[in-house]
Image (cartoon, rainbow, N blue to C red):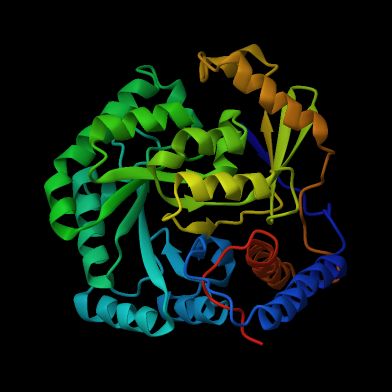
Length: 373
């Protein structure tokens, strides 16, 4: 899997994208006024991951203020770097800020697989890192902790991905009593091509569904050659949180290319996705996680690629190829020449997130809060 970036290419006109985002926002205000008396309590909760606005480098209080302005139901701190201090008084103040805004908090940590290339031994053992996250979650009032195994490269390790799965299961079981005592659940994400849906489901079953579930990432699903709807069908019953973005997929000489997009800008049928979501995991939060504008290659026509995925069912590959044949090539996003690159990237990230939130509310019927006039 390779990543391509181009500073001279532009996916779409900057002004056009801004106008599209403004259009969704205007539609949102109008429809909110039309449905002012609507009972929203049964709607799927809508939130976002702080990764969406990573270039702003906001600290936790500013991120919470921004989330409150967006009137979301949940904010995911997928990493603890935005926390200025991991102390009880500081985290309890953040909890109070979130509660005042009616925002549920979820948190995340990194790889809990000691054999993964993404694991950070400087932060302690996998059990140390999970234990710290459980303590932080308690002070914040969070009930979900998201973590990952690793990435596509871990599938190529000499022992194979099954050995990495066993390491994660061991780390989780070693923290079971602590998690249950704290009243938190640990959500393992399908991350960067590390686990296909069936493999993650097996990991959860082995670790224990009483305290472990799935963080269903629709964008990462395509990295393991899965149609996001098929991926949801397998993992929906295990889902306790999510990471959602759209994907544009098209054929290239070596296989396919993918570009993640704002909701409604790619090829995922999110109307069907949300209908099934409501049936399989209605209590999970629909958490937007936009990482837009980057092209990724999936060279499944290169024989060596299959060393990582030797057991992909033909049906799954067929459905993925069908998606790819429906798509058209897109250039990677890059800031227009007349804009300051750093500022343009910041605004682009906000735009992609806010377009996604508006699409989620106005097209997909997500979110329990009415949009402010």
